[in-house]
Length: 394
Image (cartoon, rainbow, N blue to C red; front, side):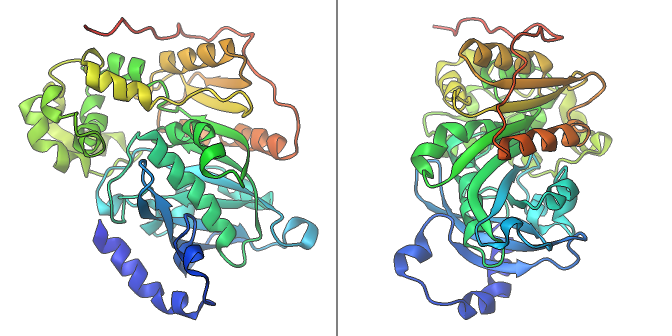
């Protein structure tokens, strides 16, 4: 993973050296751009950069992340600086291997839903890889504070990158793991990045309700895909957790290798890559029945923030982030007085939901940037019963 970022830094070192000197504090502040390389062949109507920027870990220690920033080639609205709205895209589970790093794809914008529409709207679009994916450090996989820090600092990085005209008003949109990051961001933004103004968050099949999601999926084949990253990475954040507490010996032996497999929309290829492992148990016990694991799953579940409107798109054919968990989120957040809009797509799968919901999501984001009052779907009845979870083992 460190090889990728080392190469990036080496390539852009002349760019960094050519920049005007800045105060020491500025050079080390979260959101500071360490390096930026123009993206050749950016989509029509846009220009982009592969960036490395400063951020912090979940615990607040200095770190770096790679990512991308795109800006329309058309003049900024109003003709002045800092006038563009910013959308921070948060990517889904992709695998921990360096080859899975989204900013290193030949066309990173191709993986950002609604990209052309957002460029046409005049917005800046930034996307974090998260620390540890193509950069040094440990990937904060479903670690809410770490993901949110990386997302918020990608917005700061866009503001600090010359030529973007990025302002302080922004929204976050993510899919799956990125939906988790998106919905976690409001609970972190005010204390971590008070200079920024968050007007809304959107999630496509967000992995938000971690306790019921794990309780429902721990003995399913998807545990090999998601669980491999969890048992490999979470003990690095929480030393009291060990893989041996929850995973089978074969899972423990193969988690690092299997977690590095790149996850794509080609489900047949992914399933083939995991092979016969999918026929064996991954977890030896439901992690939600192990108090230490359940506590951390609960701690990394996004918290409701009344002031920030939320939009969620969920496919009813999703066998990864189960619709019942999204129904639970809608019920719980609505019960607390939230402005939550959930749109259900009867035919959408986990992998198709970002694309099929993109137009609706961009329209919703446009309304938030325009300052329109957000509606909600709280008076409706979800098409599935909200998930329930038994009391933890004592």
